[in-house]
Amino acid sequence: MPVNGVGVTAVAVAAARALESDRPDALVVDPWAAALVGASGVAVPFPERWPERAEDIPEVDRSMLLGASYIGLRTRFIDDELRTGRLRQAAILGSGLDTRAWRLDWPDGTRVFELDSPEVVEFLTGTMDAVGATPTADRRVVAADVTAPWASAIVRSGFRPAEPTHWVLEGLLPYLSAHDQAALVDDIIDLSAPGSRAVIERAPALTDTAETRERLQTFALATGIPFDDLLARTDPPDPAAVLAAAGWTVAEISVPDLERGYGRPLGVDRTDSPADQRGGFVTALRG
Ligand SMILES: C[S@@+](CC[C@H](N)C(=O)[O-])C[C@H]1O[C@@H](n2cnc3c(N)ncnc32)[C@H](O)[C@@H]1O
Image (cartoon, rainbow, N blue to C red; front, side, top):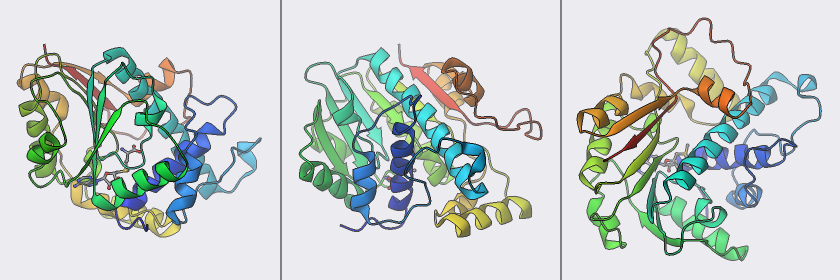
């Protein structure tokens, strides 16, 4: 089953998780990530093994190691949020090749909804079945596009709007236009019973300058990952502000917060970043 277009980014994240899993100090071990990448047939630029000496490898590989280190932090943080929430309904939007429905120790009877394009959800289901993996939750798959009405599709799959939900938006918002990002957060608010939680990776506020354009296009050409798509996503709304305005209790967690919290400095020079550059994560609770 080929994984095309934006699905390639899901394979890239799985390749990053495979590399993370190979680290001696892994924050997350995803036993299926490497098999999913292999079965996808997509050539991704990530090395397969974590090198003993990161300094000795070529620069493009070094940027892949940095990407994988970030994905390791992000995956572990969201795993920990779900473990803390212990809600019996979780919805992962733009789920890609996420294996949490097999990897995490969910409370008995938890329904985990995974929503992505038909190609991506069918590929994941088919590959996990083929390797004989057994979900640790009641996994429900929703083939849908979050930029079109999707509420009735998730409800038809067994989603219960009257029960609290833990929403996960990981690596999704950067692919949506500012308008679609706003509409998606509104949809989540509408579908959330009291006690619901959300963990959201924010889309960094990108300014569409000639320099940004050239940097993303060069990176896209070098890696084959369509990062230049991100140019269409400038000036997004801030989910923290939208959720707070709807009465949710919101916390903002920066990437440096995660680096400190998990003892994994990424070694990124942020001295030229504008102080107010938005990124990182938002967690929110509907009381
Ligand atoms: C970068 S991947 C992240 C996948 C996963 N969340 C993870 O972290 O491993 C982005 C995913 O969002 C999905 N996606 C992008 N736009 C979407 C849309 N409009 N509706 C549903 N899924 C979408 C893609 O198919 C892809 O699987």
